[in-house]
Image (cartoon, rainbow, N blue to C red; front, side, top):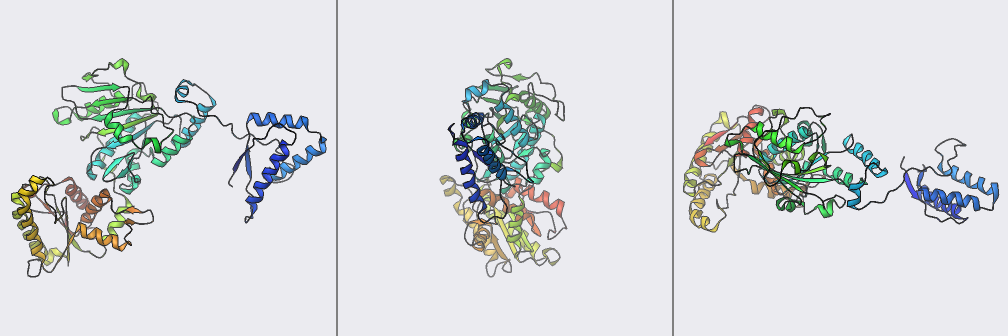
Length: 543
């Protein structure tokens, strides 16, 4: 049953109660139109209103008969079932509190507002207080590496006993201020396995911020691998760091009630693992620096001792803020190394929506062969020779009936279109245009009439998306949740899922590119799924 709150604002005149009941009658008449069931409004009454009602009762000249009539009328509308369950004066269900200024909020101790905040925290986090980790951004743009870094952040959150707010996504990036929900790129269920189910969606975080009478306290934490000396460096500033501030431009509109005016930044420059420091040492520094003074009662693991090789820069350890006291840590994460050891089962999968889209795209292509050629930073001089090597590999595979499995389509995906140059700089374009054009001509000629591969259709990533958009009415979206087909992140992830589902897969060796993280992710998936469904091999290398 849905309850409606009616706030009374009448004065202390004798007719106050009567006018209030007339308002209720009008409300119920509107509610009853077209409904068989009367929804019961629960009035929201403050102590001031109660005093006015008592004063009105004392000043009423109508005697007991008038009062009994009012009681009957009120009971008739506000009892839940049966007779004689009188509820007059109305039940006090909540006492609204005015939001105070940010400075006075921080000075309050235990108060009705604090108590209400604890109740809201319990509702959203299962206990009070909520301790959250909000990902401002991950600068990495490669989807496979983003997945890896998200797993690391989930591990950090477990160490800190905090709940991760799943970031938004968009344009191949991950961060709070991106446009689309997390599940546009990634699977929430597999993420929950890695996060121990201590996660919060961005919409829930916004609701939590808006509902809390006390604005959550915040602290920016920027972590990178920028240490240049032998020690990890921890610095503290009383304002938001510039690089973090650029990722927080949406906060004024999306999180209006979030307290930021007293937010400082703790910057941690970790030593890259490649410089001889074990990842466990850097992980211990990070966890200890962020959990000083925290309650470890519910923590699953004991925090290791703080290593001595810690340089606090211009800030002494005694002056560092207690990060554990902040309701929300705002995390800027630019760490490429695996600091925390994690199980392989904690891998984050791509969104089921993208898998469904890939199934639709490849339905008419199966069985097909997929090519992934990563040519970024490849010397232009080798492009024609590598194109010849690719055509030779395709010729061998497709003309072998025991291998080709009735394949009729070759899907070509690359970090550059078949119609684009290998480099975007003008100087590089002038130097490589002839070689790149020659490579394009070699590939296209192989599929043209009279070419070695004329029996097969060459399908490009760009052509696939064009037809997909046309199939969906040219709206640029897919499914009832409006999956954005024009988003570069959606396109990148979809391209590798299409390669994962191919019967055969071909990629370049070091001499003709490199085994990129995308190709590596595809081959890892195919190694696990080989001989299941349409997948018939892992990878074939050319060059």
